[in-house]
Image 1 (cartoon, helix red, strand yellow):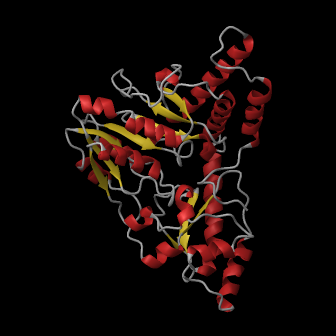
Image 2 (cartoon, helix red, strand yellow; image 1 turned 135 degrees about the horizontal axis):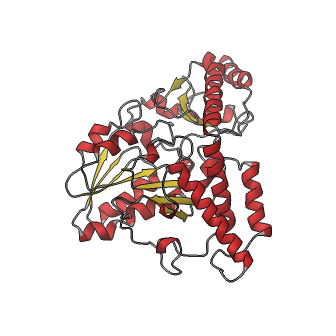
Image 3 (cartoon, rainbow, N blue to C red; image 1 turned 180 degrees about the horizontal axis):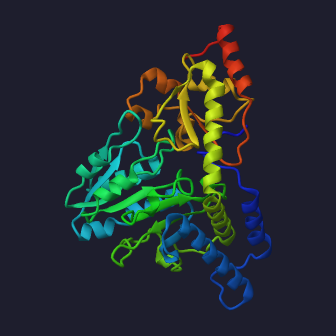
Length: 382
């Protein structure tokens, strides 16, 4: 069973139908305004923009389509550089548990002379809102904190941070790749200026996403584009719009909002069954359970390292050892290290993640595979 939805989700069949329609039938260019196929394509883009906007509680003209959250993060962070230099606001605040798609652009700016402050998490995997706010200075340009951690599923206190920034000029950016459409309230806070989202984490297609740039006092965040030519997406993301991908992303956003409560309840039941089924193995769960979004579970099984554990379950469940973009190296997680996990727990930590399309694995077989391995004296730890 596929249980790595934090890396990417299967496409919902209703979203797939939208993708096929605008790939095979209504395939016009949204920039072609002189004929019906182009007008149909433009209508599909604007309909998708409205669906994405409703998820975050913004206006349609505050949604900029991109290739995904990584591009959105880069545009949000690097796009503020010219304004920051002009205004002499060259201080950045973030956390040590961000995705590399946030940490690396921040470090690029640090290499160009910006001052970067990274706040460590509490042992439960969440950053304290007061500590984040305390790091903000008069020259702070940007505060960037993820909505939901991609390795542990722990939700960060975005509302608390946004409340504390009410008197600050700093822009607040939220990487919402894991939480967009799954946790709604935080992204609707009026003090959240920039939100990054990906379609494929929402049972949509890969290659599409959005940067939401919420207006404050009637002004949009002063972003400078990273690419030039064409003027699409308010001049911030030029190029021919991938209508089929955008239409499918919009459909995924529409369904996520319409089915939000039912999906969340189903995800909670799925997680409970998972923990109950694995209970004989005495798993150690990493991340505060009271703050965890019920779509991701990070755990270790005593006596088992991650590579051997994943191999033992290979015929039963497709799971991950953490962030998909860094899993090739099998290095220890910077997130779990920042949380202060023991070396043994770090070495054994795996991530199990699911969505509304996920089927339950054979938990009895998964448990039995490890118990049999223990009984036979099979190697468990490296």
